[in-house]
Image 1 (cartoon, rainbow, N blue to C red):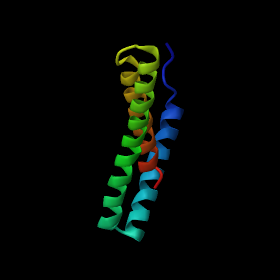
Image 2: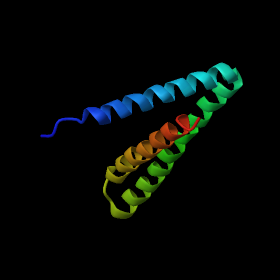
Image 3: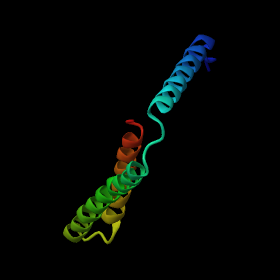
Length: 96
């Protein structure tokens, strides 16, 4: 097992500090986001999660009907859709 390189840890810490300072400076310059923008983001995040899940359900139900496999593919479609939806929501939240 290799030990972590202190130089890499130092670089990661410097990067985190720089990012924090940039975010703080942007917040001080721009201020708090307006309420309507926060509410619209909540709605957008909801749809980013729900739509892939519904598509996964639809595809899973179709496959279950074609293959006669009970609810196996429906469950897999829900899980895959949720995973994709949460990933897209995470990417959207970290875009700003």
